[in-house]
Amino acid sequence: MHRAQLTAVPAPGKVSGELIIPSEVIAQIVGLTVLECYGVVGMAATSLSQGVARLLSRERITQGVGVRREGDRLAIDLYVVVEYGLNLAEVATSVRSRVKYTVEKLTGIEVDTLQIHIQGVKRTT
Image 1 (cartoon, helix red, strand yellow):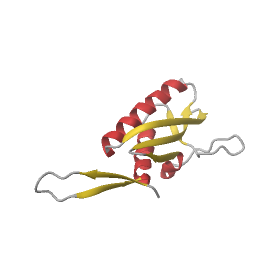
Image 2 (cartoon, rainbow, N blue to C red; image 1 turned 90 degrees about the vertical axis):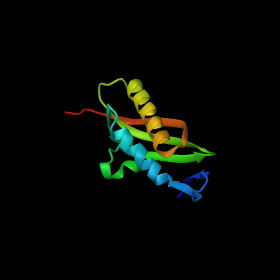
Image 3 (tube, rainbow, N blue to C red; image 1 turned 180 degrees about the vertical axis):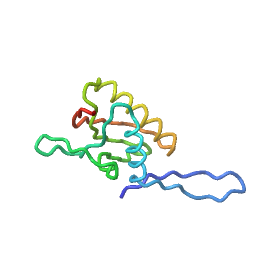
Image 4 (cartoon, one colour; image 1 turned 120 degrees about the horizontal axis):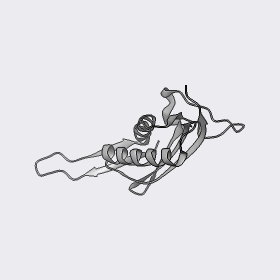
């Protein structure tokens, strides 16, 4: 498991140390944030089997997220299923800005690239 690592310089009189954030934690933050975005029905498997996107259960949201370290920045891949009838570009733009903001705010690590793979659309009732 790859870990994101931040080194904090302590203020005078404080104890020094490191903050280590595993990639799995970042993937959970991303998955939960994506599911809050308008137009996203759920996370999808990272590979299309026989051309059909599988919608993952809410317990498996990190399986639709790929997190890689590139120097001191993050590269994130998202695999999502979007609600039928919505503008896919607008949903992707909304997801991209919200995920970038949330990850950077909660972890302090800059998101360099964020690729959104729309694996399918689903009609909701």
